Image (cartoon, rainbow, N blue to C red; front, top):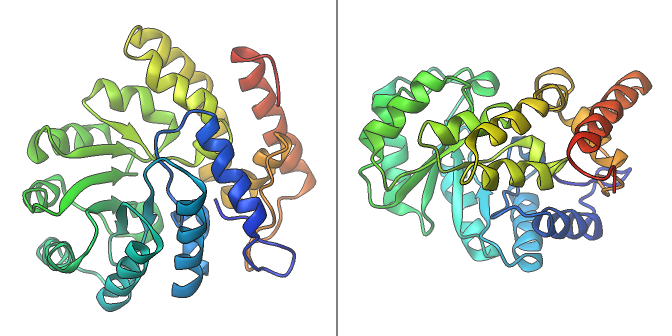
Length: 285
């Protein structure tokens, strides 16, 4: 996520602190300028700035969100992300207009042809009202510069079909913290999720526990579902930042037109954070 100051400007010091904190808690890569980074509320220049700050701060790979509704902006944003030090680009489906599957496949193929970075597809129909079919993912996955997919549909049937159609070398990432363990069991490689901004330590534990005890990983993941729903579908970015602030993580302010979480939401997400931490750690840090 992206911390902003009271005036809506990017807070560089807090952004560096957040990036360092999630890495110290065990995440394997970071994603600036995704949906929960409020990327759609930033200019091209601001997104490039955020990507550069994060890339300078961390030693893990940087998967930068570069998608816009139009091709020209996306291509330019991807070029700027490369210049800023990103290792790959996360590209949301073009939205607003109703593009068919053939148009979506052509869009990603052309972008991959021209991109200086490997491309990760990003399917999040709840935000875009556009969805990539598994067959389209499989078709695009054979491009040498299309490396993976973030699937935020919550559809595990489609997720398993994508695994089969895209092949074993394709990075298949789940986009919701509620489904990390089931997605790993279904052949997924990892995840990109809002939840990892709040409890990166516990999300990392889910991933690593699965290697030794998949049942334990699923149990831990189940304990995080209520918190995940609160900071995504129910309260969105304001709830996410409130949950982070409860852990003394410098989440900063939301960017207008987002509104700060009200007191009832702050108390609810704080209780959910405490519950998750009390179950699996020594308590809030």
